[in-house]
Length: 391
Image (cartoon, rainbow, N blue to C red):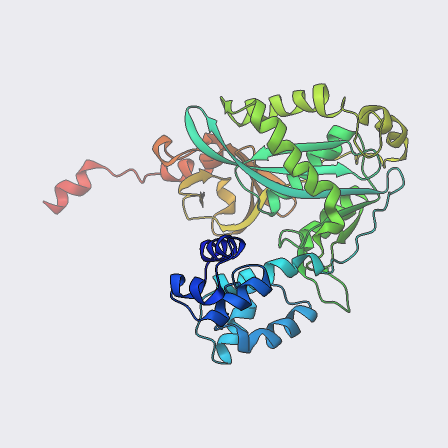
């Protein structure tokens, strides 16, 4: 087959008046090849035969799945493997990628809530240095829907008790309570979320809501962007606070710096969407917040305990004294997030201790065991003559 250099030679020799048969002899081709090259005005284009792909027989199935809204390459791969496809996933992803702009996204309508109406809550996490040790920190971010003022609190757990504590601290920071609190579907707040009957909230979360007077609300399953305002604030905290501050002396030091940063920077920022200073917009929202209750909700871990014969209860690997008249009874222990242990018999607070490590030993209040000691000291007195008679 002629190449471009051959054609250049044909054209040059032809301009010199050389016959086609002589040019063909020079190049070792048939004279008609020379004639066709001159008529074509160039060397023939090389056309490579397109090789078939293992994916070709399954492309109609892939297109159908894409039309049905299935864009997960792993799911599609499993579907076509069931039909006999034995190729890899890379060629499948390369086939899907150019079509992704055609993917229809569910429209999200931005809505603004009235002042005092809604608070959105979400959790984030980061890695920090605390007291010289690398530590994972969890932080709960609670944001007011109207003013976009937010508060966050850092801790070492994201369980139910810490979720409730974080909400309460935010209410106290704002100086009031919103009409409703919008949560994601985490088990700390939502136990079940059927599509028809609505969500089933955690009993303690309902109790918290009744205590503070707000209406609990949950996002629809797989539609967490309903809570998008707050999720953006999780990223904001990571990209601003935890970039500026990376080392802390203690949890108290961390949360002290967090509230200082909130007042000095987060509250003073001009919100990108609202084009207002957040703290100034909050001043318009504050009068619409519900008042805080007179008594703070108890966020402690609440567990039953059996009082031993020696008037102690076992809590987290250590023993704590209670009044001796409760021996053998079941009491209720409240393990506070501040490491304060309170023991209740019915509704009565009967003992209070600071949580201690096993190395510190048992915690004892002498007055708790006064009766037991008195009974122990009642020892029968016998004359020595009694023992002499036996001998």
